[in-house]
Structures are given as structure tokens and as C-alpha cells.
Image: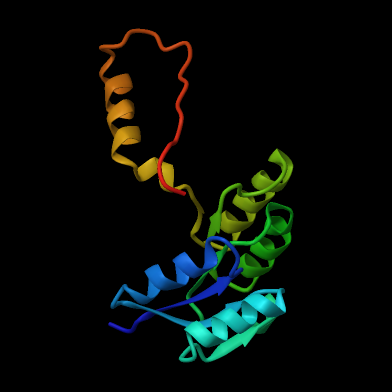
Length: 157
């Protein structure tokens, strides 16, 4: 099986973690990565000299034979970037939020469906054991009618 070729758009807060996580998956490769900030591009080149294509323009990823991209950029850029990637036939994982308005989010959902592409929103909390346990408690009905939930995420970082 050929490795899944994933491009990373955005090397700010989450970008380094995303690149590292993808490189730990034997069935995946990161042949390309993008960030607008020259300092971040320098960090990317230093940490990952094996990445073939490093650029400041996400459009440079098009035509490289990628299977998917991860978009980890400021939320106000998500609609434009995700739309362009879906139009290019790429599957997309975008960090939360999907878009900055409901209208934009619905348009992206429609575009992904029309292009028969996978589009997912990253939300690490969904996979946290405490969140899963709470979901099971609610679904069991043992807690009765839920009117309000308040949660605080605590920990290092």
C-alpha cells in the first residue's frame, strides 16, 4: 500500500505537532508544508529537511499528487483555504473552527459532498476519555434530562 501523502498548511501552534504526528504514522508521508511566516518556514526547514516542498503559498501544494491536507491556520483563513483544497480534489482535516460563520461552514459541507471529498474538523477533546465517558453517561439516560454542562480543561499547557 502506498503511503498517504499529506500536506500541512500552517506551521504555527498546532503545525509542528501535526507534522510530528503524521511522520509517526508508517502509512503516511508529509511531502509538503506551508506557512506564510518566514520565521516558521525557517523552523520547518531546520526541523524537517526531508520535506520536499516547503512554501509560503498553499496553492503550491496543488499538483503535487497529495491525497489530503491538514489546515491549521487562523480561523478567518479556513473558508478560502479549505474551499480551494476541496476544489483541487483533496481530502481535508481542518483545525477548529471549520469556518467563522454558519453560512461558510454549510457551503464547505456542500462543496465536500459535491466533490465527494472527506472533510473533517479536528477537535482533540472529542477523543478524550473523560469526554467519551460523559457521552456514555448521557446516552445511558441514568442522569435524567441534562439542562446544563460546565467543564474546565486543565493541565500543563
